Image (cartoon, rainbow, N blue to C red; front, top):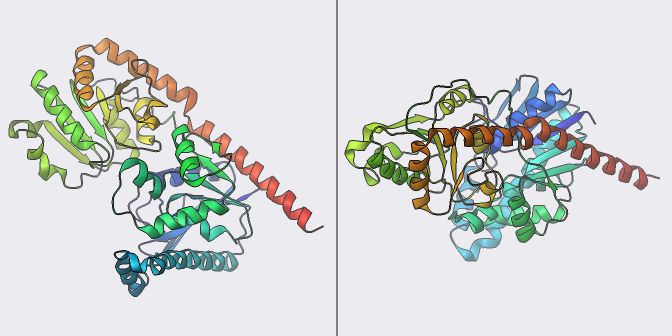
Length: 404
């Protein structure tokens, strides 16, 4: 096993497009696989076509099927609005997967590239493009649209996306789940059998606190600013803390999505100057900023897993998280952080922790130990490669048997 293909719609690089957690994950995975001596190719679709080499990893994105065909884009939008056209709507999404199959096959032919194994993500059922590829593949369950809608209340999810996800899991036999919660919901909604649990991991040598000096009474929010991720809870929490600790400040790291202009909906005007918006930041900036945090809030209403939480804990941040399964698998209440059962709990616990610096520091130290022992990138990589090897060997054995 030498050649690995990563098929994805997200890759964290300015030449591709902005990306979320999946894009960051595949950027890190590709680089680590390359460092271990594998030939890695990342292939996918994006807003525009682009091809380049990123630190030894070959990157090739073709233009998204619907962006490349404005008529099909219009049809997708119109058929998605009326139930009488649902069949045509679903077929458009299947056509998209066939398109990806074709452009991937063409790329492989032109570049004399035959992967030994491929990995892709679960959302949008992208693995449908690999069903007839002729090489084994695995699907990592980062968080499908089906799960986001049913578990986390996401609205207006296209039926075509969910339809492709259902079809994809009917044919996918090698599946990775990234948490026990991920295992539960994917078995519930897709009936997947015997998935492999591999927790996401981070570079614990990089995410190490570099600044022992904290910003006094600082509360940080780390993640995209959205209602689903809990930014509104963070604002309301800060308002309550500020009334007790007059010098408290709130620091928001992540795409603001216009919340700078909505502060008056959550905070009195005199508190606005105590809120800092940093926008999206790179790894080094995140490490520097979170190293200064006294508290980091994670009030998300739903997650499959959170690399952001791992990074904050690795930096010995004292964290308060919402009581969702993906968080409580990692954070044990009053052992390595705090779990808020209700929105009011966030402010109650924040006030208590800011008032007891020794306790807060001990929780941060235990948080670091948790990440070192259970959620390192090296542990994830070893488990991933072991699973790849197992899938590859089974595929080779079956291929040999079918040709005898």
